[in-house]
Length: 402
Ligand SMILES: *Cc1c(COP(=O)(O)O)cnc(C)c1O
Image 1 (cartoon, rainbow, N blue to C red):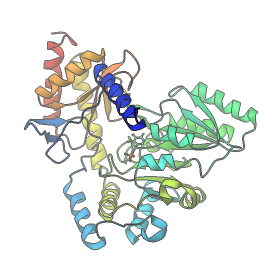
Image 2 (tube, rainbow, N blue to C red):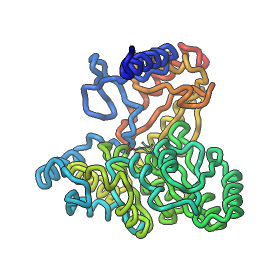
Image 3 (cartoon, helix red, strand yellow):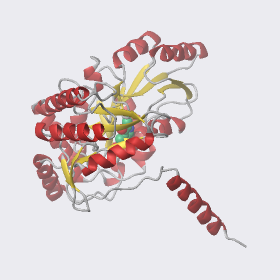
Image 4 (cartoon, rainbow, N blue to C red):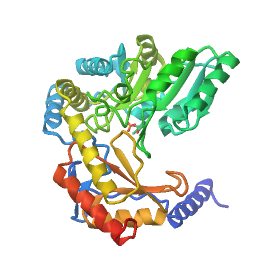
């Protein structure tokens, strides 16, 4: 008789080969260089990197590296503890204060990742008398977090404010005690920005609370890089903000939730990924503090990124490409055809440009695209090379006029 383990092994082998046949099997490309605007791959090729979340070019920035080294020397390698046992150092508290100051909020709490911040945000705060209204395109971590919570669930189509208002009316009629609207600040596949001004207005009208996941916006959207709330003119007016230290803000890892002090205090008591998972290592904490200092000192990096986005979009539109034109640092170049998106990405790598083609089920059927992510670390010369490569490959593949 077959053992259960053998049965599972056969099933997994089947499913894995199906993924491969359908072209859905995710492979990992191996880099041998630092994370930067230009990278070296294991086959020796170099490429301009347009698919990292390294929006501010801080992943290997000298100031960030130096701060990490210093914290490593002064505070050690690891904490070997969760926060409430013996995993809290002075710098962990300092970083939580810096994050609250950055957002104009009352307090913050650190997590090992934003996935954990979102996963652990809902269940401690809301219960069966309450309701959560989510944007349909919210990140997987918010979706999972909401699932772990007993609150009633409502959902509106991406960025559709009429549907959001209809949900709020339903919630009012159902008599839920507390209602929380949850949205990503920037939707990462389209690069579109949530209409936070309208969301805050609707929340006020119906007495709801707001929560924004700022992973693809924190540090660079808005004049001073405070993210989507700043861009939409509602800085300091969001009840709960989550974000990552693993994208623009240094790129290592770590997440946070910031907002009203009673909410943060309760998360420290009850949020399971905080209570039952290790404290952030000192090197990351020290480096992140330096990142917030840099953003406090000047808005040079967010400004450089905004300039790069303008420059790139102009070049790519002039070539005749069709883009999704959001206000973020993500520029999806629409190809609609899945196979074409893969061929184009491969050809671009041959030209020294590293991008990824996305297709169903990551994006809707027939909406295949190449997603370009810009960075303050890209030089104008590098971006011109990227634009030229898109022109050359696009003409050869018949995507744009010859
Ligand atoms: C990347 C991302 C996360 C997860 O962040 P980690 O810190 O890597 O866990 C959560 N939400 C959104 C919107 C993201 O883009």
